[in-house]
Image (tube, rainbow, N blue to C red):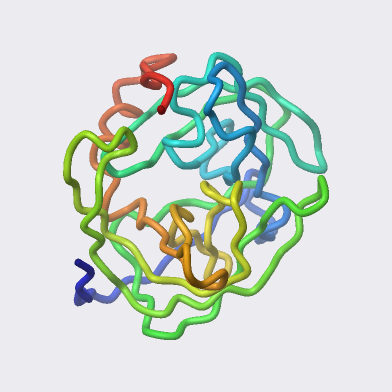
Length: 222
């Protein structure tokens, strides 16, 4: 079941690491490479949302024993700092040179039906920016990443050229992060769904506020 939700107004502010230039999607996006589980995805997407912090999907890193993030600026080992298997969100931490980043708003952003945005995806071992349409705001009734319990995920129905391995990539509207790609339709290559990390990020926020160097990133998915 999917039902549309009403939203309230908000001005979204975007920050960069040096506070002088507005970060571009291709500058903040990364590929998340993982290993450690036989059935684990080999890679997913993500974006810097704070100095040394990368937002991605929980199912991309579930059970991983080794995680590396990379973009045109370099490669960095990463560890899981926040992990929510019900909302399918995770935040990674890395040590390295300061990177441009985009800041998540404190409250949900206004994204009217049909809003145009962009998402940066891995294509042929490089990152490219492609257009995406946020069709409508939805609440998705689904299962947790282990398919053990029912959960609701606030997010969006989106249209873009989505492929396997694109999970975790962050959808940007006017330079602001609004959603994390989660799943694509089995029947339509251009239809997919993305999670709102602000409306669904209570556990993530609490884990990051605890300032623990690492949290349990769960077991491997079957």
